[in-house]
Image (tube, rainbow, N blue to C red; front, top):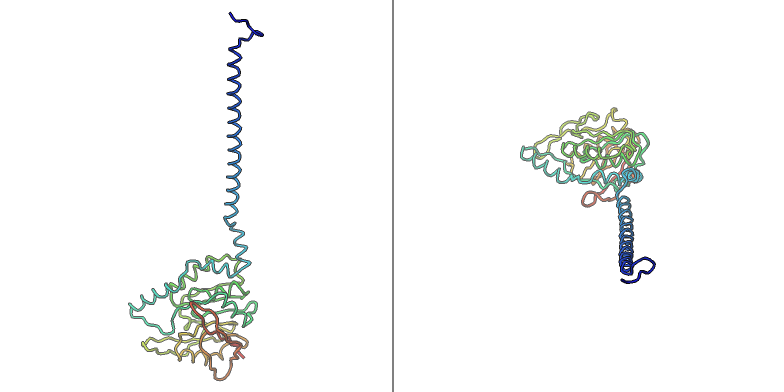
Length: 288
């Protein structure tokens, strides 16, 4: 029998050393795993924070849009295609035998139209009218850039009118400077705030009635009307009846000069500006 050393067999000491080494290796592996998991958790947390930062805060985005009214307007018109809508509506009308002169869709460039508004120095509380407002871009540009008492857009094609209402619904109330926005589905040339001067015959035999402001429109501080596709008769009637605008009112038109008799409108400025898919001549007049 082997002698005992310190009461512990030498064979037991060997087992004890093996077990101790095993424990050390296990502890080392556990430390590596915990460290690695901790590192991954930290990285994942950082990724989550980065992703959260990349997702825009709705309140922050809205504040930025209010600070930049044209950005808010552009956002409201995302996905709005007035050209396709107008084309489809005119095709539908033709199949029903409806042909209207002076109606051709065009779309203002918001930044360019905002510049044109500056030419006529909008006044706090006055009223803005757009005769033939389409998808409402000119009306809403006026509404987000100046403190008008009211802005009104009148559009005869219902699908375009509905797109204008959709864009207005997308605008945050705080993005609007105008006190009120009114979008009307109807014939702008026959609206009840104007006076009738009889029907105008067109080549297709369809009659349009041109109506322009009377005393009921004395609050019309600023009127916008795209004349580009108007017939000569319609433009002449508009020019003739500008005398019915209140003194100091301003009129923004496109493409066609007005020859007023008696002379009652003073040309303030004329300049080509971006419009739709190209550019148009804008003319600003003041009632004298």
